Length: 555
Image 1: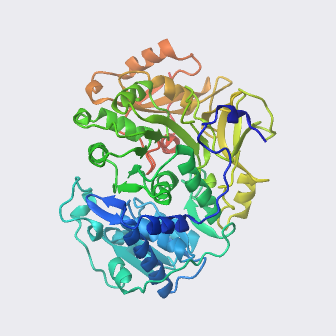
Image 2 (image 1 turned 135 degrees about the vertical axis):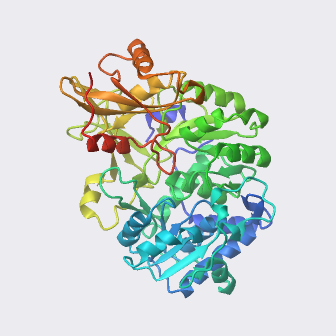
Image 3 (image 1 turned 180 degrees about the vertical axis):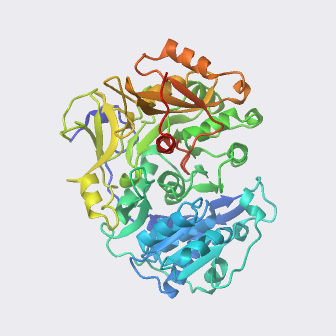
């Protein structure tokens, strides 16, 4: 059935898609077709497709020899690196389930996800072992496989190395060396995946915005749908060079950088972590064509003093998310990447990142995009959950897509709440126009109830970003005896404005630009704002801070 958004669909992108292959099969096909082509580049170390596929095979074989069975959960606790790629695809090939763990986790957070998933095998960086050691006695870990950044770094790096390289490679008693496991594993051909549509491939944990993190069960078919569907949406070719700076343990980096590049047969330039200088230098040196990133990373890039020394015109696609893009930053980015299609996207863990995406041929200010391939989005009434409330009316966003989770791991009640008749109820508030473009207003639990009005933090933030002194901003509601709640704004100033702009300056600017019921009454200047590992500003942490101190009262 023709959807309203199909009228403005990109002519070269399919409107529907059904995956027929495992993503691991796609990678293996590329190893056969392009055995000598470079698959991964890591600070100057190049790995060709045939070598990569053989190493994945060895890792799968090594895991099976350790006793890992079909359906077992195997956790990965690493920054971006070749070992992450090898571990990820090796786990899938062995028929086990990938459990990506944030490498910034401390031991209690690690302990929780290991216990909740029931993972008995962990692949991790050796420098993270102190956290593993504190957690392991409270978990079911049997196999701890450790690797070092130095295992895959070249003798003469072409880019500045991440700070973790200050740690030399360690041999730790009672653990398994990653490289030795590969060397001793026999080459084995095959895949242990049985049911493409039903077998779980990934246990992807939510960010814990409501309660403790929950493991979204993503099937092989769901993963293939978004990863391969991304290549069709953007029109990736084997000539593209991707820059892998988004964390691979996060859906966006896993799907749109790592996964999409390797199933297409592209070259993937891996950075262990983000710094503006290294990202800019890597794009220029490798002539990267695809950058998947976040708004906060783009802001840091554009504001980096040395950016004008580098040519970034090779980029043909720049896609970002996590926060609204300030118009000033967007304009400056266009000057640096004049040949690039630019846009943003929206999705969530429960849909494996699928939601809305800006069409390559047509962006619309104030809107995040139209539904992804083979995906439906509806806006339902906030109180009743009923569909069909009409264009431009705000309500809860619900999504139906082939990449939706099977449910939350061992959480049937939460699953019933989030997944109803095939629709994922997102908890996000938005509206959709007559062409099918989606606009995000905020979270149901983040709306500010001010003087009887529902006020969106996102709307206020978008306006504040037009203030030339502001680098980053976040808005939350705090209690007020007269208005119920009032907006409080947290501001990170651009370096040249620090010490020159005060609270009164921001409030006076807001008086000129924002309606009185939406206007911030309190300004809190910060050196930085709390962010997720993917660079998304976390309002919930600021809300928790306010709750702990009882909230401020506006004058």
